[in-house]
Length: 226
Image (cartoon, rainbow, N blue to C red; front, side, top):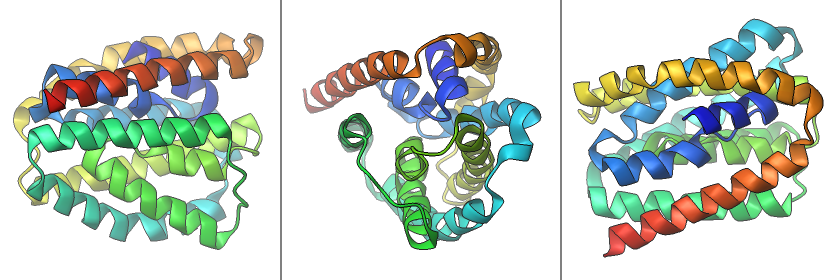
């Protein structure tokens, strides 16, 4: 959680990529509720610093696609077993890592931003990993703009996912408490990310995180299948 907070605080997303596979391996019954608690908390720190740089128009398109995507994600949570969900999380992480590593060129307009919001709604509600689709669309934006825009999107979308999970009876109290206990690590990670944004090569950090996320996803898939 600390590493994920450092990464997301530095580049705008990555908390779910790093933390979701590990949390699912530790206790799949806590997912995706616990990760959604921290997904709704960390963006508040970013918005407190950079909210003026957000792309509010793009955010509106993203949220337009997010709502139907969240509904599909809720169906997946209800009808997929914990073991299958583990495989699903792992595969989604690997796909996200592959797309992010290749830095696929995606034009940023109303259609692509809405589509990214939809994809983020599906994967975010089902697995807690909703950042990569939005990150791909905003990958060519300036650092403050991408961080502020994604922070606003993640806060609203995670809050929406928590409500949907509660509505479909997939939000146990243990998941909420577990997520709350992880918040102090978010705070420390965010504080560490401040100097990194100014002094470290984001590309190097990004590559290292993608490797860790890919290894975690492979381990999660193997554990689930076995």
